[in-house]
Image (cartoon, rainbow over all chains, first blue to last red; front, top):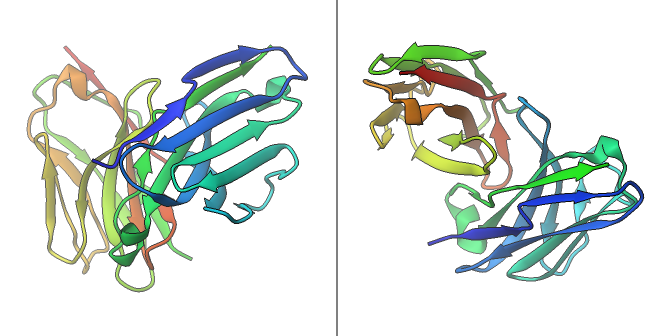
Length: 119
Length: 111
């Protein structure tokens, strides 16, 4: 159980285009979703946290106009990298938690990540 | 604030060697502790967890014991395989919300 599906797994696009990454919880309702960015050989950097139906909360230093997050339903969150440039190239990972996961410090459920390459 | 410190890598071992990856934490309250594994090009997978002091989490031959007195959660495996080559992240949750990750330790296992 607790499967998170992330799509696409790999995307290559030209500089200036916008890219949307989807994160779906397949067998549970994800009340909260987290978006991370991971640079090569580094740990995960939390970008933002989103609760279903609410605006995302961005971490300090993350441009909210650059990284648009939508969490419109209990099973889907999207991250849109707007006007992407080569410096936005990275590995993006989503994770999700259901409501009961918060009650007992249960772990987050992670997607498989999306490798974004901007040419 | 809460934090996780784990040993720097990379760790390079021969197949069947004993593995220890050290992890210590700082947290207010009573955190739950986790080890995640990330294989090349993939997301994170939960490897094991422990939710209270003296709990031992185990999975796939890996073990870690929640030591409150030393605020540690060291990962061990008695005999590593080439397929264990990956990055291992120690993490904690306290208060039910955000996961705090360590920097990750890369493990290379040679045949």
